[in-house]
Image 1 (cartoon, rainbow, N blue to C red):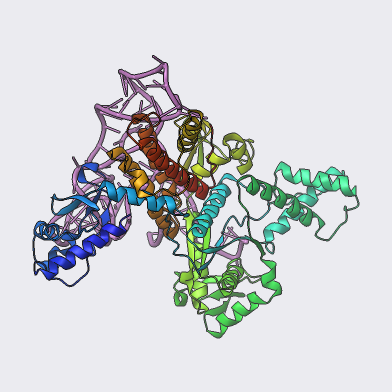
Image 2: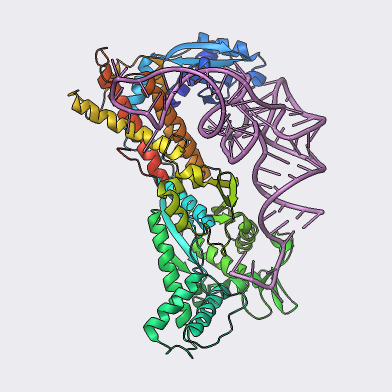
Length: 552
RNA sequence: GCGCCAGUAGCUCAGGUGGAUAGAGCAACGGCCUUCUAAGCCGUAGGUCGAAGGUUCGAGUCCUUCCUGGCGCGCCA
């Protein structure tokens, strides 16, 4: 929406230069924004202030020169005022707003910038090892990753969603041993339960299923049957949780392929060849100082097994090698350091580590009635993501997980999330959408002609109130918000925007009776406006993976 | 001790690239439905933006130091 006014500013600047009033060559670099205070107009520019130094003139004098040479052939600006230290406050014309609304309405993608066209991006998220059901913490990861992927797709990127699975590590062995121990218990044989084994009830259930299927045939089994059964069962559960949340992956990547392909050995050899490793105390170390880390890190343990970070480096090398322009890692705050090591490793290999973009999220706490809910496994309180979905529903889970900047700790208020009332921000936004649907239904019932198809500026002349323009302005902001959210990988911006847009809609709805307005053409014009607002709400909710109900 | 993140209204949190009188939602208080869904709206109250310095026309935003909380700093993953 700023584009056309920016052009006006550029031309006015040129005109002022041509008239010899201004001298600097530089293009205007100020910002144009919607002022927080509506009394400052529809759009405000600080360009006069940013030019002050170079022009060696007072900002207000520059602003005056610009206003005096305003080039606005299309009549987009209704008035231009100079305010405060040198702000240029523009009030825009009805004509401007009408053409903005037409542009938005005819745009299939609501004018969201498609800066990602031709770029391939991978988003890796969740990546939880199947040692138990997904937790609430995984939930934030899952929803964040999925929504980042949606944002990137929405801005034209070709996106792959990947789940990385450490099936080569110790964890999976412990899992198998845990099931074996429970299995032996079930068939009445004493077996020592592993010290660091997984104690959850789900392990026993898997063991029982094995008893049912095989009796005690597996009592002396030395292979991977326990592990395989556990992995399969738990993965099924994880997938079903993801399913409920509307999350699908394009690819599951197994760590062991990095071993079988020789990738891990090659990484090690390359680092050795570059003189970036050192053998010491029976282990192989990555030289921290030389790769930009604060200390040396073990790549291969003295046991001969790779430490977790080596396959991680190989994994990221693999990802970059698959030709992605960018690789996004969605990680909990406890993995920041590890990610730094991985990127240092990539740089050491001569790869462009800047193509790896971590999205870090802080931890989640649950509260109920102001009290923190302990997420302990022992008391069977709220541990799993499935439980959370059961209690508050998919829409609230997704919306709430996204309603904080990922860098901030997230306090998930169960009481609020389950409320089916106005207090609950999810319902607030959804209600705005449903309200518009209802209005259209009511219009049909009353036999009001509901405009169909693509609007033209002439259809909108009856929109002449500030209320109308404000709503248009809000709806038009969608494109900028989504663009910024996608660029910065910050879904929460969309959440806050939708709450603002919903508030504008509710305000508008309460203040203006839409149907039965006697001004000629206004009912139809406002239905066109609200139809577009509804499309924006639906698109925004869709980006978040939250439903946009017709009726509530 | 070192690193990363956070500290903004009673509570939970927004506040790209520095802009005008710092915002929203809960909670509190007072209003608005015989009329398109009151799951809504309007109003009141609530702040030394953790502290102190600095940078400049201008700082919640940038720099320095300090305080508080979370998370890391493993031959665990």
